[in-house]
Length: 148
Image (cartoon, rainbow, N blue to C red; front, side):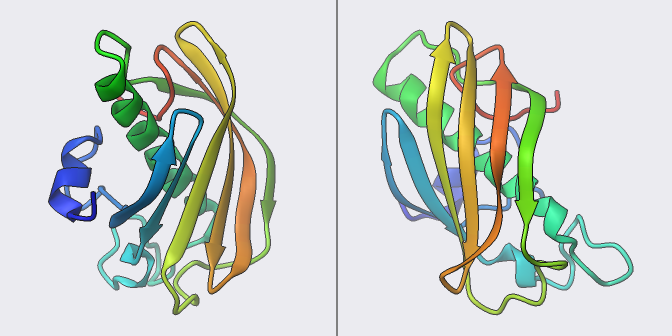
């Protein structure tokens, strides 16, 4: 799946908050995708013309939501939407995402699934260098972040 519209249709966010652009790979425990929206001067999360690196967490949340949606397709009846419950062990190596010229590569790994809850580890890279990493705890489904 490389069509952005098809990918965004699986996420709980509508444009312009659908931040992911392409799915690279996925399996039942992990997913890798890319994004170029961090370079958009009209990015919805920009403040004072800048996109803070902390917003890499939103990219990771959307990657977990995509993983959950794809897993739900593979296992009909599985919950595909969840709520973000915790963000832990965050490490940021940049101040701003908008200073990265290369596409972002977002990788998520489901470390633990307990019924409708899950813990994911994530890594966001730009130009082959780490930008952000950490853990996300989601409740209510197989994974993903939804603010509804």
